[in-house]
Image (cartoon, rainbow, N blue to C red; front, top):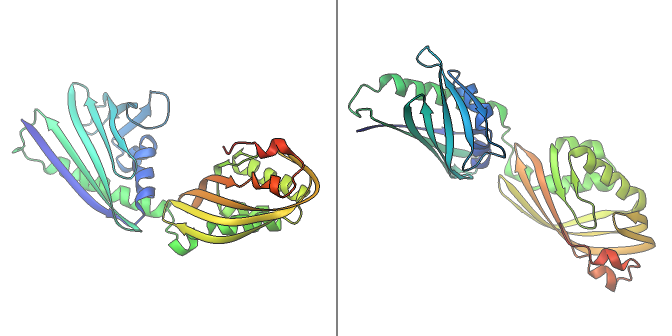
Length: 289
């Protein structure tokens, strides 16, 4: 004997953003769309299969303590949990389907073992509806809808601003906790470190330039190919030269969340430095991070 509940809604935001809000930030956001619930993660690490959450449910008027365990976590597809409110057990699963680039179908399924499916479900269905309405309002209010044409040019705008020394422009492009994986010992964590890295780069490569040849992207990822050139006068990471001009192929991948870049991977053809007469052999052997 099991009771089944289902609620679907269309969120006018890209699937990656909806999944991040609902699943990745579940502990923070669930109590916001359902004020009867309080959550606190008690297991270590990021949200994923095996995550344990302490739960307090006040829906009946009397607070009931319990737990939630994540048993399925597939980015942009689904999240599922086994929920215990005191001795009662429930199973919840939410799926995510892209309707188009800017709309997502979010469907929640709930199973309550021990409850007769023919019983009156009006109360619980009304709570699901209310929570869904609040959740939709929160997501659409807090996540900017950025046109795809703008997203594709985020990388180009970032590197153009860096080439020009306009580091203040990074604030509108990069997430404050951005992670940059770069070769030659130039990886950074956080927007301030990335600004400082660009400042050092411009101090020893004043003519640094990035010419973008191709840009591809969707709502969550951008890929680009460009030519990076300049004249190195000094030391940068584990590179060192005086008056050495270079021109290299570069591939860049960036992850996007809420209209800003959250992570960047840079792949540079450093091996070609040898063919261009680079004096620092050690830099050529630097692995890409």
